[in-house]
Image (cartoon, rainbow, N blue to C red; front, side):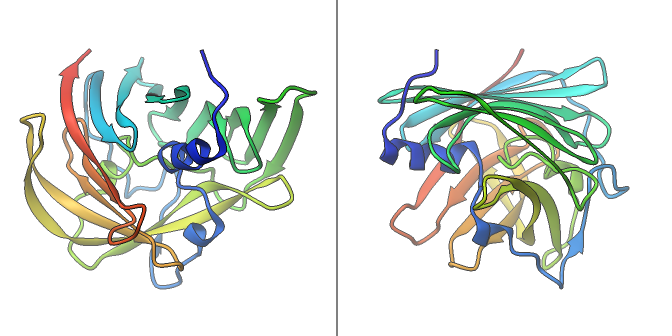
Length: 253
């Protein structure tokens, strides 16, 4: 069940549901642009798994399932004081292009969105949590599709290994002020490597990737090529909304 969320909770939930925001999508001219299906992507082989991470509300559950070598299903369940957020999305197993998602979406208010995405464009149905007639929006990309914007998937791991100092940009679905969507670019830099022992007891020699927007907000990801791929995410480093998602548990499904 999906519960109505207060505005402050919506804003915090958005930080976990997606990294949307126009400043985060600024295109960097000095980075390598990688699109779904590009040869740089080499998705590691993995079996279905479940991981739990710390969150601003305590913890959230993350499940990833490869289905018949065609689709990778990503499910995130976040418990909040006001209710439960469920985010469900599908990735093409070969290109890692996002093909659909069903999720609360707060870019234009409190809504639930059912989105279908292709290599050429999008077809979304927006349903207000306040009620009313659903709104359908469609449009075209100026890229070959988009990647999912959560970070908790095999996508970043599929681009490793990279050397410290390397930069790359990935296209994501960016909401615009007029209620439409465009393909924005999020840029990452490889900061180095670190041996990390998670609270789950799972160790990795992770690549540290940093994404910084023009406002100075920083998100760092600790990424490895074995599941669960993301071992830590540290958002808004040094800021008042600073919080860490640490891997708490991991198990095959």
